[in-house]
Length: 467
Image 1 (tube, rainbow, N blue to C red):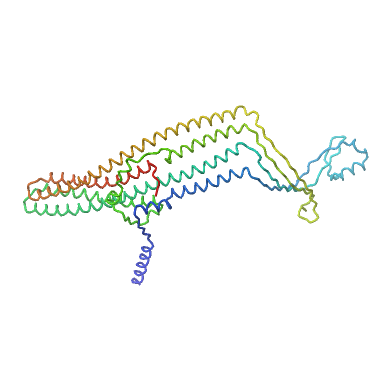
Image 2: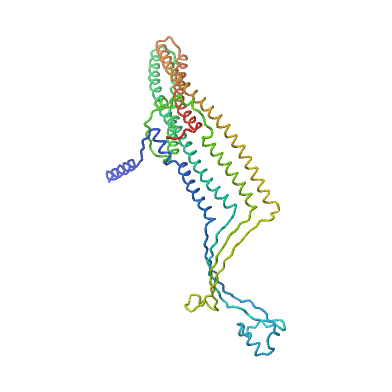
């Protein structure tokens, strides 16, 4: 029984393991995948679909509209009207004939003022069915609204382009961060392996009486710190993979294999030609968005001005009515009385207690603000482009310096280690050399990430399109 249970457990775990999704990506493949599957990209595509529907919804306002209507009424208590008795012969038979004609029995006759006869007009139940066709002939606000809807669609399309640029930069940073944690883990494990050997050798030398206990303790402290750093970086590595999955639109538990190396990406992202790239603010997506915002404000002003104009519409109505004291409206012998109507409606705004004037003034102020924002955007984008160029150039120089420094620090640490075990150098000198090496290693890894990230930021600042 135990063997059967063990086999079932193994089979279950194997099935679960097989179901775990593993995906392999280079950086370019990760970007391409994210541009199709990231949450922000999908949301931007939905915004465009919504904008297309908004354009059509606005367009239909000026197209024919057909509405059907059915009204059914059943008087629980029919209203009573009074007829002057002097209009009829003042005889009982005449009055009874009138009461019967108007569907009011003498025994249900309500109390009426002297000289009047109470009567009930119409039937107890009636039904009215109609169909109405309406057509807008002229409305200035409709024409402006149609232009605004098309502009809204354009803004949504530009927002998608902006989202793609942001998504690309986010994936590049997330991908690079994963590689940084992987390299950090690899370097820390290598350093720990070397330091553990040094610690064992120093401990053996101390036990043989050739060095001081402080030298061993110093190495033990450094070893403990490195192990703590390793645990921290390993935890960060898990989070980094989850962040990359999130930026790509994957479930965060998806197992990823990155095929690009940090060194390779750093070298491939060195492109000094970008620094001399000419910046054209008019082609930048942020400037285009600001221009469209100004256009929307201009259309809103036109709309407020159009509210002073009259609007004209026409309609055609066809209907039928039926009357009965009981519900016989669907019987074959039920009689329906038809009716039809054509009309034109002209609405002329005359006085709104200066409400329209206030709305027009507000629209003018909004347009002036949009003009200011457009100029501010132009200046800001030019400044950001120069700043991004400087930061990218510095990141390349810093990477080259860090690469040289890490080689120097490795040689210095190696020499101090030899001197320490030969007894001509102190543990303090070795500690300084080790800390310098570890610091330079982290600077080198970070400098590679900076080259990758700053290039992505520069491409966004220059509005270089995604290939």
